[in-house]
Amino acid sequence: MTLRAAFGSVDYTPEAGIPFGRMSHHTLLAEGIHSRLTARLALFADDTNLVGLLALDQIRNRRVETVVFRRTLAHVLNVPPGNFMVTATHTHNSPGLAPWRPNDTGFTLLDKLCDEIASLAAQLKKNLQPVTLHGARCSAPGLIHNRRSVYRAPDGREQVGTHGPRQHPDFIRVEDEDESELRLVLARTLDGHLAGGIVNIPCHPTTLYGVSKFSADYPGVVRDRLQSALGGPFLFLTGFAGNQSPTAPGKTPEDACEQFGNRLAEALLQVVEKPEPLPVTRGVAVAGKAVSLKLRIPTPAQATLAWEHLEAVLRGERPPSLCQPMYGYAYHFHHNMPKIDDWLAREIIGRWELYRRGEDRIPHETQEVQVLRLGELAIAGLPGEPFANFGRQLRNESPLPFILAAEHANGFAGYLPPADAFQRGGYECCLADQSRFEPKAGDRLIRATLKLLSHMQ
Image (tube, rainbow, N blue to C red; front, side):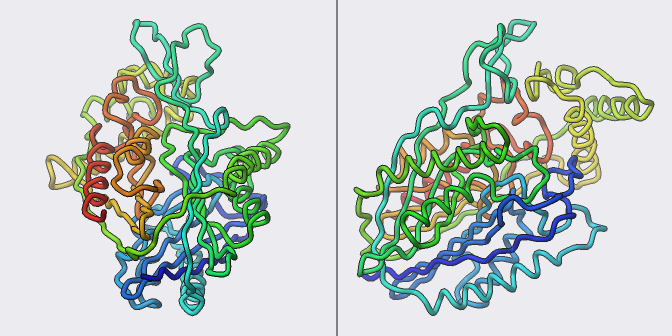
C-alpha cells in the first residue's frame, strides 16, 4: 500500500499589545515579537483513509479550540473530525486564541486562524505525494533536566520544591530521571527529497518565559535549523514533559533559546544520516478513546483558608505561605512565591464554588487519548502534561516499533504526575485547574493509550 503525505504551515503571529494565553493569574501583555508563531499541518493518506496532525505554537489547546479546528479540517477534507490530532508546542509566549471568561469577547484570532488552516488543508490535499518514512533517535544527556528536586522538609519528610536548586543543604535527590531521548521522523518522496518531518522532544519550551514577546521559543529554533539542513517543513511535538525543563544557560533569554535549540538540532543531525526505515505498507489508521477521570475536590476548610488568605492580602498584609496549611506540602515552587499563593487561593475558591453549585457529588471530566498509525509509526497524543515516566512506559510497552508521544493533544488536562508524586507535593500536585484530576489519572490515560496501540498492531 502506498502512503502519501504533504506538509505545510501558516504564520498567525498577532500584533503586539494583547495578553499572553497563560494561566488566569497572568495579565502580561506582549510588547513585541521574538520569533514568528506558526500552525503546522501534516496530512497522511493511503488508498482509503486520510488523517492529519496539526501542531500550533500555543501554550495549550482547550477542548473548545480542538473541536473548532477538527471541524474546520473535516469540512475541507471530507473526513470525520476524529481523524485529526490537534497539538500545542506549549510555548509560554503565545496569545490566547479564545477568551478565558464567559463575558469576554475575542474569538477573532481563532476564527482568522481557522480560515488560514482551511486554505492550507485544501492546498495540502492537492499536494499529497507518495513518501517513505524513516525514524531517527538519539540521546542528548545534560540538555534537559527533571525540575522536581526533592528536599528534606523541616518535619523530616521528603518534599518536592519545583525548580529548586540541586546545590542546597536540604537537597536529597531528583524525583525521577532527567529525560534525554530525542526522536525524529522524516517523510521522503520517491526521488529522495524531504517532503517534511516531525521532531519530538520532551522538554518545556520556557527559555523565554520572562520575556514579554511572542515567540515559538526553542521549538522554532529546532524546526528552522532542521529545515535549513535537510529541507522541507517540520512539525514539533512536545513529548511528555510535565516534569522536564531546559538546561539553557545564556547571557540573555534570547541567547539561551538560540543555544538550546541549536544544541538539540545538532544532536538530531548527527544521527539523521542513518535513519531506520519505517515500513508503510499497512497504511494509515486512527483510534481514540474518551476516558472519564475523577476530579479532586477542595474541602470546606481549604475554601475557608483561601478566603481568609485573600482577605488578608486585600488588607495590605502578606500572609505566610499557604502550602503547609492548604495542602500539607512544604513547597509548591521551592521558594514559595507569594503571587503563586494568591493565585492558588483563587483557584481553590473557584473549584470549591464549581463543586458546591454542581449536581455531581463525585464530579468527573472526560478527556481523550488518541493514536495515529502511519504504517509502523505510532503517534500517541495525551491531553495536558504527562510526566516523562509515562513517555518511557509508552516507548517500552508499545507494540509498534517506533512511537512519538505528544502532550497537549486535543485538550487540556493539566499536569499528569504518577500517583506517588502527590505524596511529595510540588507545584504540579497543588490543586488548581492545571492539577485537578485524581492521582491515578495519568496511569489511566496511559493504559487506555496502550490498549489502543494493541488493537492497531
